[in-house]
Length: 373
Image 1 (cartoon, helix red, strand yellow):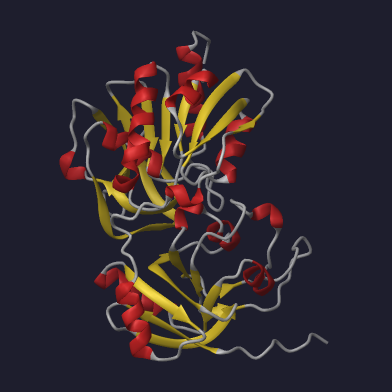
Image 2 (cartoon, helix red, strand yellow; image 1 turned 45 degrees about the horizontal axis):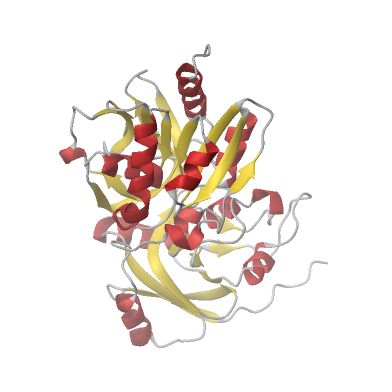
């Protein structure tokens, strides 16, 4: 007979606009806060929780049942949980999965994460989509509504917040592969499955920290340069990000950017990046490839986007757009051999429709080296 789940403590979620909901505590007892966002994926919660692009954000899952297949160490996209808190409708203390290492509750406790369950996530998502993204606080130790609302109001806004240096590795690391190509990757929060995609294609990676001296990059003598995903406001990362992008552009070798890397490449050409009203987060976002006319179902995680009203046609060509709101999802650069996408072709979780982008980058490297694609 399965033992009864332990009694959960009461918990409160308070939004900065004064909205308050009550539920049950999951994870550890404590107080946490951040920008409240939601993800529409039906599975892959562990990969989402460990995606460095979510650092400093409260994650609300729109799929109601979370935890029912437990957790597995192989599903981590980074070395630790990156979200600052968790909000779910129905939390599963039990799990059914012969490959699982343990329960989600054990996983949250091990990673010291505060969460709340038994709340109306549908109502909260509709509220955010109407009012816009905002900060919030979860607490299972402070049960004073007014105090928590004030904490949410006082929490640092994501706009202007530099976070990539919080999640980057401390020193450069080489990830070897059985192939002839060398790629310099810049870690603003790089996901494990991005590394896997490059290695599977025969690319040895030298992964550099977000703040890296250009002389150290020169020594690697890369065949191409990759700029990774990451958290925070890309404008706040420009002081250390843009000099590296400029060096890579001046090398004449191919460049590829995903998410924050895409935004930094656009900023390097003088194209502004803006904060979005809500943002895109999920594994079911439709994107149209304007070069092929095909629609890809994509994984996305971003709260900033290239400003579609301030493009410079002499510098960039739009290659992909989001079919829900027409925001820019991909660029090809005209003044240097570079391409970038706002979404996540490595998925994890999500569909593999966009994995061809890694192949396209590899073809660019082959062409630059004078090899057949």
